[in-house]
Length: 386
Image (cartoon, rainbow, N blue to C red):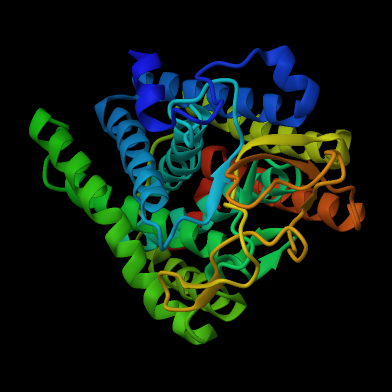
């Protein structure tokens, strides 16, 4: 079956469902660790969900479904298609590594469950969940882009504004997407005292059908603040707006008993941040080689229109591009029409900035999880809590 699937999807490209860890380690060692990191954290989240009950299992399954569906939808739309995952040890399709669904589980399950422990009102809970998810995701976005775990479209406007190599639009997407996910799940769970089969189905239906739509509606409005594409102003306004909602509504918090099982989730979250900090500190991006599917090479400066209505160049121009890779490790750049080719990681130009950024995010993220899942959550509830 897998051979037939491979032939049907991309008969001419040399991708494989499975690649030896040793083979992958030889060209992208940090990526090997990244894959295992997310798969381990996703499994730990499943163990936590299984121990804590059906409402937590719903969060885990909903994150898997809503997240993976979002990835597949935006990958399939030509006007949005602006990212290409590296070939991992386990590939579900030519463009979808197994670890990517695990990424969605992690940055949606961990923040959603942690913030639920405060017992906030739905709007404040959703806003804080989005903020925590953004902090959770950002170091991965920085590390992954630097070590060629994926490549971006070179001239796509929604991802043109970047901070430490990661698009600001990516952070805005996580902020709004996970906030919508949290709010929709809360609406489903609020309809029943118990998580029945009907509640489970309703929750899955809501998040799968509405999360991406609600996210797009928010981003469409916000990005007008930057002239039609997501940038610093849109992200700052959304972040401040969400933080304001948390502050305004936090006095309505209801006490939530501490759960011994949350130590597992807290330990996994800290392990996640420490691992990404370690990867940035130890590995050299210049030694990383990414062979796989990338933006199609073609004639330079052929204009096309992206989903925002902005103009971008349809093909990668190998003589004029601004990405964190080069073709120095190969004999010559790929020819016109090539989709499958090799890119070479670039050495650090400002290691201190990248290292400081990932470390700061890791410290902030770890601190937030300690407060939410540890003894500090009472302070976050505010004077209105009992």
